Amino acid sequence: MENKEPLFSAKIKKTFLEPLNINNPITIQILGICSALAVTVKFKPALVMAISVVVVTGFSNLIIALLRNTIPMRIRIIVQLTVIATLVIIVDQILKAFVYDVSKQLSVFVGLIITNCIVMGRLEAFAMANKPWPSFVDGIANGLGYGIILIIVAFFREILGNGTILNEKIIPDFLYNAGYLNNGLVILPPMALIFIGIIIWVQRGVLIKKK
Amino acid sequence: MNVQSNKYIYTYSIILISIVAVVLTLVSVALKPFQEENRRIEKMLSILYSINVQTKKETVANDYKRYIVNSFVVDSKGEIVKNKVAFEINVEEENKKPFNKRMLPVYVAEVNNEKKYIIALYGKGLWGPIWGFLSLNNDFNTVYGCYFDHKGETPGLGAEIATFEFQKQFKNKKLFDEQKNFVGIKTVKGGADKNNPHEVDAISGGTITSDCLTKMLFDGIKNYIGFLKKGNNYGK
Image 1 (cartoon, rainbow over the protein chains, first blue to last red):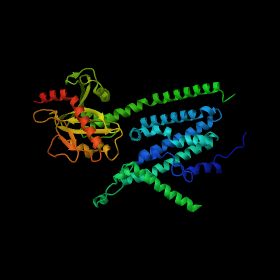
Image 2 (cartoon, rainbow over the protein chains, first blue to last red):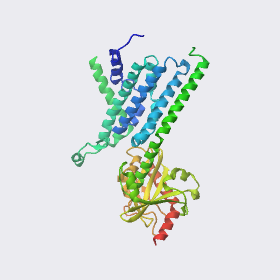
Image 3 (cartoon, helix red, strand yellow):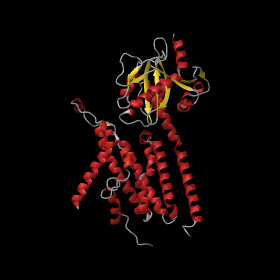
Image 4 (tube, rainbow over the protein chains, first blue to last red):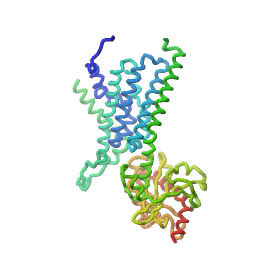
């Protein structure tokens, strides 16, 4: 038997926490920006997208880690893509069957998870060289790191652009009567980039201070 | 075993692909009934929306039964085509056929004891397809309500065609002029003449989508002219 590690060792904790903050795939590694711009107009699609990515990164990492010693080096990218594409199609089919309205809003972006650099990046960088359990944790954590940013951006875009959260009215009527208007610019993709920019700015500012 | 040999790579690929194919087939077969049901529900919701009945997923089947009293398929001359189910007609596919071979679904609704006739529309938007339903009073001329949707028009701009604010303008607009010539309904940039029964405001910032919608309305209604003219005569 190999030396047994406890299920939640310090190393696993580090694997889990790093992608959420100091090694966040979007704000630190600047990966997966494209879909972060496209699906963050409203909160609910962003949430569903985040969950989809968590599932795909988690399970693709797990499957590749299980297969890692059998995969021939020359076709490893193809094998990785096959696994990712299969998982994404399954997720897409499930969304179409059970949350049809959201899947319509996400349209091609669920399919585009296949090309999301975060997924394949984690397979190459982590799952190919680690055991299944740490790989699974790494995948889930990177998906969550991506999802958190998506949800933060979507929260501000929906509340400023539509005055709602999960389609429930948040901004009270008296503000509208006093002349407040929903900001149409927030709904457009450029504002998502600006929001992500602000998050990166704040996060790095805090991180530098800590050092 | 040599993991890097050609023989191993080929065997590995074939096994992997076979497993993936089986898994995907199983998922697709297992989920198909749910997906079909979602599409049916969406279509029923859209049809009801066009007669200004807004309902929920859970109640749509009952409401559909209550309001939609009849449906049939007509050809471009307005003759009823037998043995066709209106609900199963794919308007996108029909629009690819030559004009006089198209099968056109018509739904008949009864609202407050008055018959409304619903026709289906399909066209191109700026980024992808747009479609909708238009309901007409029993003079086959005055618009009672409408529903438009799109695959991927620009949010906040072209996508506004799917909002009530835009769609409510269509009520009481007319398709034919007083000489019974087909005019249709146009979206007009810079504001429509309120008294003109053939114009509605276009969407500012969504000019191309608005123009596409005008084209869809014109072409879509033209499909039904045979039917509408017949209906006009019956009405007299």
